[in-house]
Length: 342
Length: 196
Image (tube, rainbow over all chains, first blue to last red; front, side):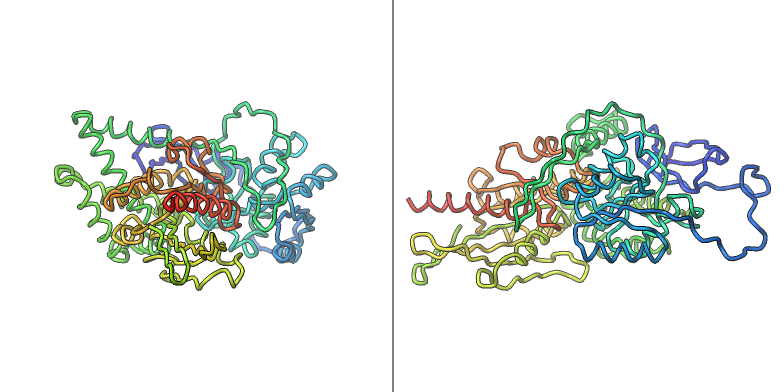
């Protein structure tokens, strides 16, 4: 099947028979953007590797016994999530800080690890990184719980810390059991994955990693929690911005360097306005993209944004290009790809 | 400009939390409000919509003891972060004594951080102020997110003057009081300088 990068339009050919999952993430070789692709399958009869589903479905077999190690700081919350998992027939081991998690992991091997990103003593994402470096724990499935409900800005956890999935704290109780069964291969993937549902990413090149640092001992200083060590991020904002500047250079070769700077500024402002519209109106954006009423639903915000754009962008640019509309359309395309709308 | 009321022997200072949309300014204030003893704080006023956007400002008065018989009261404000509400931001900056610039650590929000920082400089300039005259600190918020930019990079992009800066996870309170303490200290030092 053919896939098109929603950002730059580059076309790629992929072979669905070589991909096990229904949704994959691809990184565009041309522009570097990451986008989701729903794999279109041929009819089951044409697929040799697909296990024939039973014609009549008897009662589903009980799920295999699975042990989950759950690390959440707040004991009440820990109990709430643990109960939800136990109801779904998981055996749950509990921990309220990162050191306890590592203690349990040194003695036994659960099937999955569910960790709050900010765990006292050792952060959840640090544990995820440590686990991925241990050969004996390589099969362990890891789900991180984020503090924030900003899915659109949260890159897949697996890209950065080797986790398998990321779950929004607001939906842990209802989504986690299903997500774990799916990750552990106890059930097949759902028809339509949620934005947080685990999605495979292209294999990462194994970068040489420095030896794991000694456990950061977080001095306990109530009432204020200790400052966190910086996450060893692999993403670079400077690089991202340099790429954007290079794009402008390539796109407008006939402009003078000063003019290009103005264009770059105008494009940046358009991106900011659109990202603010999305940040503050996630539901309207979703509804608008799905129902084709994006411009009507967000009329007021778009108008405010356009006013600012006109105030700040020189006329010679506005007469030649409409970067704001371009950026809005780009957002719609990106969201369509995310929701699987063609 | 701090407001000194000699009859009631009170010094009022205005601290503004500035930064891009949804970077955590209101969250900082809410955490401070929740962790401060009732006798030390006034009522927190939030002019926000149901979608959590700060339309005008949040306001939190804090009592910080006395200096030479004068009660020190800090008034904490936030600005609306959304790029198109600049008129409100300008208004709130009037008479500011200290600024906390809250940056969103997510790589995707770096442009928004830089834009907001520049916007702050421009808005101060319109009032004849500059960051050389106003004490300010920087808070790198949302450090728990996997897509957080490296600290060094954030420093290079946002903290060219090497002012005090702090990593934070405001929803958990991490770094919130460190930031407040630092800006309070700088404002009080400035106040002392002015009293000489």
